[in-house]
Image (cartoon, rainbow, N blue to C red):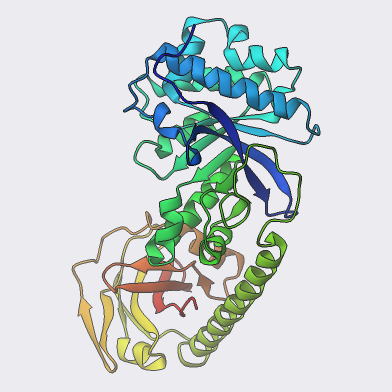
Length: 403
């Protein structure tokens, strides 16, 4: 069979993927390139949903690229690995219509005598027309044969958290747009941090692709990158890279990142010590008045003790608010509202962690991670402590700057 719609030569190019752990080349992503009068250009559009090629033509073209790539891999050291792109629809159709041991890539790895452990199937961001449970079954079968699984462009519209949870990938590839936006948006940095934590909880590694500037590389490291890919490091070529040093040393950048993180940690520790000293000196014992089951706070004393304290309220051990809600409105002013009394705040992610800290160290103040508060329009850190049996005070404190 010939692919009539393809008149130009299509060959694989290999984009090196570098390891943050040792700075070396971990694997290569296989990219399709077409030969033109000006040289080789991307042929990725041929595999998009807008392509005019039939499913049969796409399958033929894809397999031809895979064969050429596997030929290169066969003659390389056993430590070399390839990321091969496949759409979720094509992946499921192959496994639905054929026996698992007839799957093209499994057949090809046997033909070229290549261990499937050296192949990472990169499921692209294309919308999937079937059920995710069906896709999960297909992925689990391939994983049983030794293939690794990566999800491409995490954060794009088509790749959702549900897909991550069901497929349990070995690698999460972060969308380039998230990296670029992160340098301008603190909220996007938070998203990156949560994706990092999600990957860690699933046993997956985070891979950032399309890194083109040192700033992007820094934010990728901040977002938990274990692997990196992009023109800043090594560009794709027709041969597997030989392990030479990239244009920018990963080890040097990791060292720079470490120094910056240490400076940030020292600022945060200084902030924490300062707040704790203030709380011990001015708010021990905590200034409250109890009337029946209701608590009143001497908010004037609280806000005067530190200009960084933004809010204060008291709950019981179940998270039910027992006091009015006091919020700073100016340097020496605050507002008291009672409409929150009786509401439950245990859904807040830091609530039970703070409760546990109080049980672990009842004499000390618990401290949350920073979070962005939409009402205050700034990052806050919550300090909390059990002030009477079953009564907990929560202080929302303005967090220090990140840089």
